[in-house]
Amino acid sequence: MINKNNVVKKNWEFQKILDSHNQVISRNLIIYFNKSDFFKVGISIPKQFANAVLRNHYKNQIRSILRNIDFSTLNYETVIIARKGFLSLDWNQKVKEVKKLYERIADGK
Image (tube, rainbow, N blue to C red; front, top):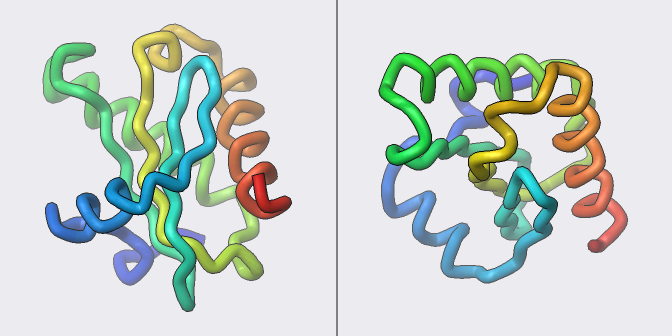
């Protein structure tokens, strides 16, 4: 379950996770992660892909997907960066893509 304590908000938090260079990559998403004591997530949609309204829409879609995943054993700080192809996927493909990448993180890549 995602609540406000599980969200990466500050620029320095994003930067710390990105600088760790631990990542899992698919065609449509990149997830950077860093070992932590608890689960945290930040979501980024690059500006050149869509206007602010659509970027927020895609972020809300990702949040909705994350609500249905159990993160109780996944103690990582993560940053999800969407690639252009992610925006045009249908809902089921988006869900599969996110779950698959988090499973790879849980399995140790």
